[in-house]
Length: 168
Ligand code: FES
Ligand code: FES
Image (cartoon, rainbow, N blue to C red):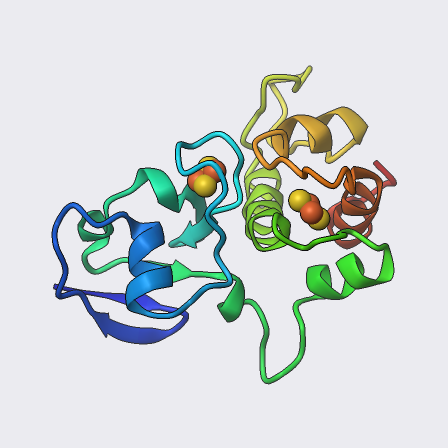
């Protein structure tokens, strides 16, 4: 079995009960993806699978045969940080940094969901094909990523500056 991780074809020779999170961290040494609750409640383990965000602690690695997975280690391009990573630094969007990889991956996928017009629980107008990343939308759509340090103001400012058409 194989998958692609951060652009590299990767063989999966593992116990089929191995979570995607443990495969990334313990088998591949990609420790940027964090283990917080290990039960789907905190978002620290968020990674991208073909551009969609998932909680890696709730997924078996073998489910992702042939899929393309991106972790925080794969967000930079040519040695340059992703614009959202730069914005997190600019706006102090972290303290301990433990939730940050998940926040980054989640926000990148969330912005893509907005672009595609996918509604959230708080989207008021379901008849439009585009959603606006306003104050309520941003908080609702990022509510699955907890920050125990309470760095939410900086996180919101960084995501808003990078992806919102208007300040959120
Ligand atoms: S470690 Fe996966 S959601 Fe908390
Ligand atoms: S920066 Fe510490 S948990 Fe978010």
